[in-house]
Image 1: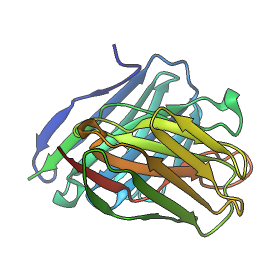
Image 2: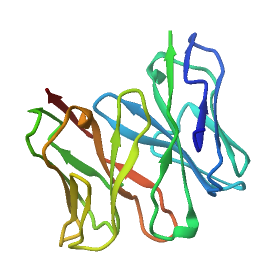
Image 3: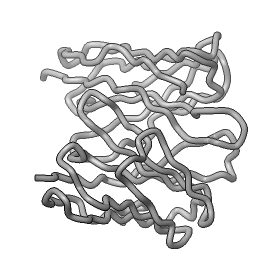
Length: 115
Length: 113
């Protein structure tokens, strides 16, 4: 079983619809992240959370919101999806106990298409 | 914010050839990470570097943390078809306790059998 699990793996939704992407992890890490990947643009950070009570905006948070329901769960919501939010979305985790050794571990991704 | 410039953007090579790609930063990094993303999958950590000048190997992969702490390179020797994928460099975005990663835009590697 994957340590970082994202659901769904693929989703097609209509413009204006609300959609939630979910992430759960069994690694016991305190830090969780949501990234977006577009061709040629690499991975861009949407939101991150260093613990259950800590939520921070990343570089491209507009149009997104998140919820850290538990240490192991971090969900990403698109309140009103638009076509330019079509992308590959990744959840990641890391362990603050490793100090500056901030390796992130990624889920398998959710491919979202907004039509 | 900090930016990572990764080059080349893409490479097309023959099986058996060696590959080199690099990453430069506009500011000093204390950690350099190299990830590989297989098609349809999430990025997987290949090599982590923590000290300036450090040279680390993982099988046919070798990565170095530049002396200036503003660059790093990744070499792949004797490439094979399964080396195909996107390679990303990454590093912590800022000092203090805000350890979040900034990623380069990736190098797409194609290996022709």
